[in-house]
Image (cartoon, rainbow, N blue to C red):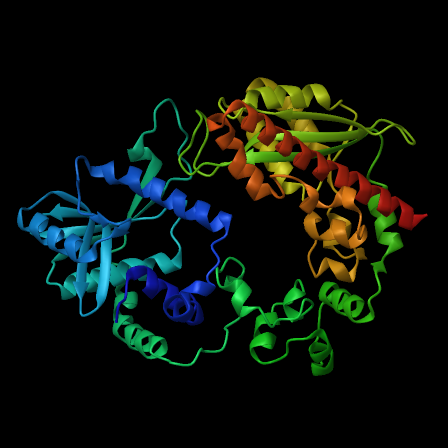
Length: 490
């Protein structure tokens, strides 16, 4: 086999995905979000190399790719010289290959340090380090320790980055024995599975969401299928058993809870479900003046600003549509940072100025806005009272759609505003995110914002304009959805 630690963990995660990566790699679609994750991993891994002082990098790059044989030979030479710290130390045993992020000399042996760009350890990470220990042991290396290095979620930056506080190092030498015991059996299964000449059937699971082969594996899945149903825990079991369409599910007699039952009946009938009583009760909670709020954020694995932590959501922009009285004019305010300086203080002060103390604040999936404001209140004690007052008056306009008080078949089982809006206002170009330029979703906004500082003036101005238009559409969409809820109750 030509097997690596990433391929091993991929096989354990989804055998079909692993098979496709070997036999049909051209079907893989790397999304911008996944590419960002890969780039973040490289950035974090590069910084972690300095955790134990000076190091020697065994990586050899030829024509843009790692030269594995050269890396393996270089690693042998460095170990023979008792080099204290070797990064990207490479090993191979009977087709099993791995490169250790950090290999550290310890007495008569060597300790493995695997670096992850996450805030915590995941179960699959333990299989990762068990594989590395297995390969090194087979190569005759005395492994004295096995450790996982990840970002410390509690770290708060002050002045320069302190990598010894930024990273948490957790020893797992005594905790991976069961994973090591499973290694031979897992490797045999992987070899048998990957040697299959005919393409295996898809394995549908919750792990499909972020898979780069999702589009390929789901190519024959109808637009409306069992997978579209929310709050239905057996949907993957059903699909893997051949119950794919909603008609098949209804005929199967499987019992559904209220929300998936509503989704099923609406999708089969083509009719919209409207619970006027529940919607009316929700609308009673909304009182004038109405302020529709949406934040956009930037996020950095390695904290960019003082007072921030790994992967903390840093609000850098907001849009605010508002109506001061019944029948009043729809007005708008907005804020956008400069992409260079920490935007939080200026944003918090403007937010307090823009939202009066008697406003009913409306957000979509409001937990996000509440969390952002809570963080701002903790960061700025002098603004705390006003910020928490705003936070306490936030109402979530996603509730009627999340709880299926209002459900249209075109929502495809989702309640994200990106699905609800085109389902409720079909064909309205004013509410179509696809008609925007440059920024069409929150991930794009998050990625573009920090890049503006590096752009030429004209390009930066255009990017800022695109960000403002995107965020403005988010709050305008909330206004239109509120108006629709009011309309159906009359």
